[in-house]
Length: 448
Image 1 (cartoon, rainbow, N blue to C red):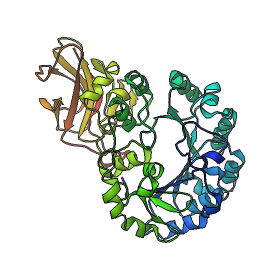
Image 2 (cartoon, rainbow, N blue to C red):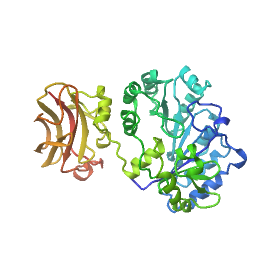
Image 3 (cartoon, rainbow, N blue to C red):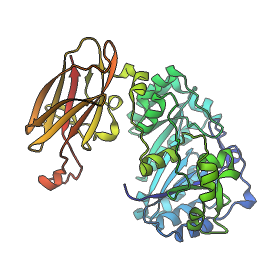
């Protein structure tokens, strides 16, 4: 991944917002007189040493209630900055004004997430105001202007019985929906029981969220890198915080400076005291921006372990066709299809899949495709090496004796890891534009 710097502009305007969302943690009112103009934000960006890979998240409250929001977004995109905007989709006139007036060449720098947590009456119950039609109109408007967008749905008690219905609703409309668990940080604690977690798991899009739910909320950031140069949060008054959750929970502890008085580079470089006294002593949290930073830049491990898999064992079987619930998604490419069946390519030298032994299984069967000559395959189960072979080219099926002393019996869960010596890029070997890194392809695994 490129060296990306992110900051989040957060507009805390809940009480000015025309939707009083019961899920919104931003319960502080914006002091209009102290709000700084967009020019100060833009100057802060312009003076960064490196803005070539800068990404800005604009959220709230409702950011389109800010008077000069159009000027802010327009100026950022003209600087080449990618803007991710979270909105409730009800300020239709302002959103359309932005889409009409921003340059066509800059539209690919925009991404919208429209917060819609229910359909019809469920939406009304959660938001407290019946504005579903307005939010839906916003989606059609974004589609009309050919801007990247998605629906964000926070899973909560009021909509948990309607997850499948909502998923099918947006699918039928051709609109991408992302279901998100409630964050755990600030004043918000983990609010799901074991039954909830098992019901929620298959509807999650992000493998990090899957880890969070499969662990029943035990997965949190423990060794945080907030304020260490990759991301920060800026409020409407120009205060710069080490992290978003810190700005909500105890802002005085996590504030590092103000862009009115100092450059953003200098603020981040002088953040050592905040890091030492507050970040390093933080109890941990699970919040979107912070979790993304830790996973993308600091290699936080979010792979499912045996305990996680035991918690969601109802989705694991003795035959695995590599659906998203039964693989380590970070180690596989997207599903592909051929006359031989569906398959996935390994995206690195080692990839993991999950299996359940039902009773007294004797063999493991794999169907694989190998594009390279003399590629060696090693198979591990629960970190124990069980098999090695030199693979022939093309498709082949393997049978491996299933003799495993590390556990076993009815309904036992296993993590199978495939390791290969070589990975390749089709563009370097064949007449192809495919520049992905590939190992071998797997059609299925079963134990019987």
